[in-house]
Amino acid sequence: MALQMKPACERCEAVLAVDDPAYICSYECTFCGDCAQDMSHVCPNCGGELVVRPRRRPATVVV
Image (cartoon, rainbow, N blue to C red; front, side, top):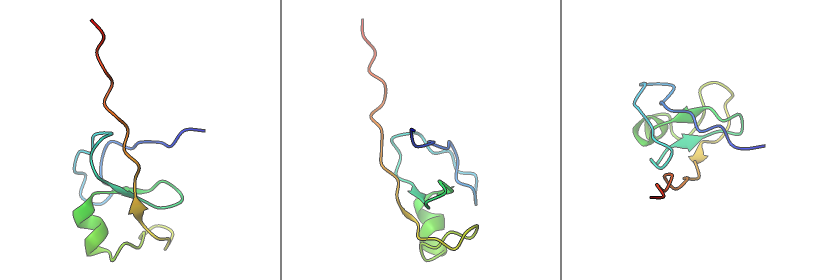
């Protein structure tokens, strides 16, 4: 099962590319760094810890 890479912060709706820094809880709620910091790294939905989301490398274009 792959991690769902949500495209936007759930609080401020900032766009998050798959390689952008973001924070997630164990339910994959996703927040930008500023919002995570404002919320003391606690998910407002489940009360769980917000941790750094792993980054994926952007797709490589083969020519």
